[in-house]
Image (tube, rainbow, N blue to C red; front, side, top):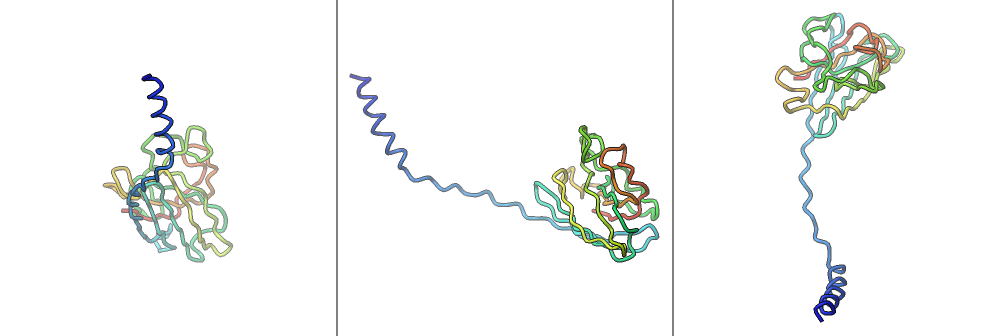
Length: 182
């Protein structure tokens, strides 16, 4: 008798449950998008353009604008470097190496990479100008390991394109542009 009663209750309760309206779930408030802008200093110390950084908790987008004459025409590697210091104009070595908290190998195409500083190449037009937008899901603007951490970071532009595999910087060559992110 118990089995019959339990079976009867189960078959009558299930349709009622299936027809119950779904309870609306409150959406988590979206974290605000953070923004940051900075000038790009060229190898001769002049301002050659600017960056505009937009970042959320899951990605960072960088818009790069370089004035005519700012770069040599062609492809150029760009990377996030670990220190926000571009004061050694013409060298930009004070920006140190790539942002790389995980100690990954360099290169977007490297099976042991990429490191957090790796970004796609940008292309300078025949007049040396650039209008590009690149993104990274490896870094964010703020936080303990964000681009604006205690010593900041830098966006560094290289003389040559990055091959995305060679160590340590993809044969990208000299540092010809630098923007501080603090």
